[in-house]
Length: 151
Image (cartoon, rainbow, N blue to C red; front, top):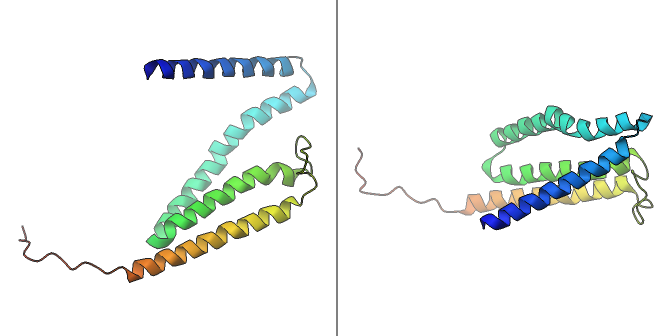
């Protein structure tokens, strides 16, 4: 098992080195787009850590404290799926064709697809929350154990 981990780590480091060499070949000649590329590569993690992660943490904490137990998991999953779908759709919403034209994607209506997918996600969230609430109300409560001595 240890040998497999070492081999996987070496393969990962080799891929990282290859990616770094490709980036240096791309960005080494200083041209106006190099600075934008560095900002794009470094800006994503910074914006994620400074904006999206704290917002997601506070939203998750609020959802956990405000929602009834039967609704917590479905709504949290729906919120995560909404964020992920928004991140995936963002390049096509921002620019009509995204970064690189993709056959079959550029001719679709991205807004309609995103909104339809989110409608399905939240319909499933609502159905799951209702089903969990009904099941929680139907579940018979066990009576307290008799004969247990209080200590």
